Image (tube, rainbow, N blue to C red; front, side):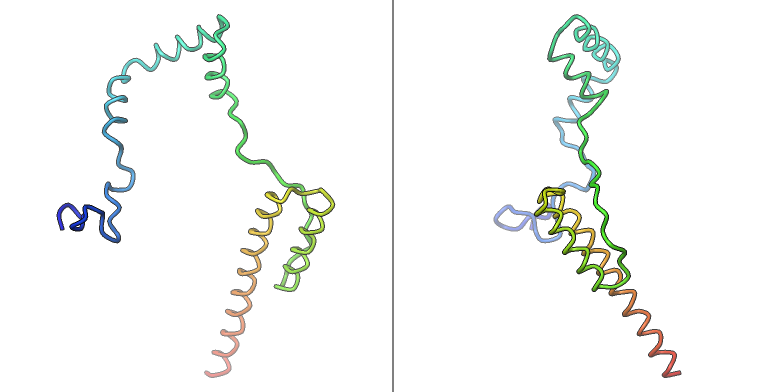
Length: 138
């Protein structure tokens, strides 16, 4: 092995190459060229946008008001205190999709949250039972 690679030139298991957070050489070179010019470049883009350059205007607007990455989902699931309640909440999500209140993608995300919460409820219940059993054995 040389430099964490096997004889085929591929990185070995557990070695992905560069350390996490390290930067590409080309990126570092570009940043060093731009260093000290950021203010002038920004002002040029703003000036061109104000003059009507549509590309510069779009660039400026994307920085001022970026497109939202996500939106809130309006959905009222029932209170969940057990895995059975989570099952009822999942049925509610399916109903909301069938009625057009949620999109399938939104429903998938909500179902993921419901499933995570269900697992949390189950682990909490198991831990409570385990504490009771341990207390009985003492």
